[in-house]
Length: 428
Ligand SMILES: C[S@@+](CC[C@H](N)C(=O)[O-])C[C@H]1O[C@@H](n2cnc3c(N)ncnc32)[C@H](O)[C@@H]1O
Ligand code: SF4
Ligand code: SF4
Image (cartoon, rainbow, N blue to C red; front, side, top):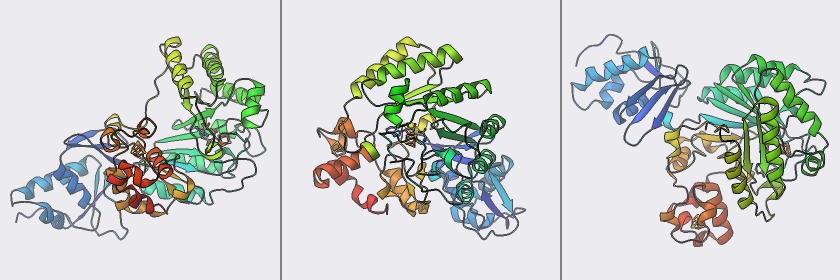
């Protein structure tokens, strides 16, 4: 065996800055701080998984080398990874257990700071309202945990996140510890209240990695009241104006929820473009969950028509960059439960916002559960065959599971062939 200086040291993969993306027959290892990208094969991927700070270089190399000549090659690669910041070499063994499987790293998390809201939107999927009183206790502790496990992007949501008493601390900590922070707000509280004043806007202005999404539920006073049960449209528009005046370009978002939404969305798109030259507007369809769980909704056609029209009217309408890598979009599912989760106010995690709260669990720290989600094919033509619900379920694990429960699991070929019941049982 060739002696190499430092072979008794302990290499640790820097999980905070390293990310792996699986391509068809290779992987990309990405440094998320300086955006350098390395093409690596399965062997290097396996090598990375061994670098947990508790095994010496010598032990790792002996474990994975196939013959003696591999020894030098592997040592060289460890050094290359260290030189590029992916690996730290420690003189002593570390005590804590670190998770080295970067492919299953939860890089994106939504954090639900509270269930309380100053508005009471009739369609809120999270059942939020002024009567709710649940808050995430010690949010910094939760954020520290997310940061340690290598989360890069967080979305602060609720309820209304600005109602959390520690919101300023949360924003400051998040800005320092994550590469991208998205504040989802209804925009009413940005500048009012004794505690908040203009501080929040200044904080956002100072910390460029904080982005704001303001939901604007309708565009005339009466309609806004009908949706939210509050007369706040003027306040929201004033706050949007304040953000623009401070050089912050908020993304305004609207849920297309009824037949009048066409006009609302069109008016909002024009308003933003005319007043601020902004194309940072997005419209999403209503999800039948929470307060509208059992309501029959049939606005899909109107929504699709609106989207087609919008693209025609605003040919340069900004195409929103997906926070998910393109290559990952080709994966057999959307990433819920392995790349992305939502953390509730009680620190339990759900695979995504679409899953009901009864599926919240503390089991997502178990990598085997995340691996099951990684491997689970979303409903697709092959598994679902000629099922009449395919249009509804296709590509979404949550919709597939919801429908399977409605029609009986024994009647859902997708759930049966993928043993979905067994996976869902672990979400407790
Ligand atoms: C639950 S809210 C929390 C953050 C903040 N209160 C707000 O309204 O922006 C997050 C986003 O979900 C959207 N939303 C709420 N209920 C929905 C539903 N049933 N279908 C689709 N989107 C919904 C809201 O409009 C908002 O953009
Ligand atoms: S959608 Fe947002 S603003 Fe409306 S009730 Fe839910 S949490 Fe509040
Ligand atoms: S009900 Fe089951 S089989 Fe039918 S489309 Fe949905 S997931 Fe597929």
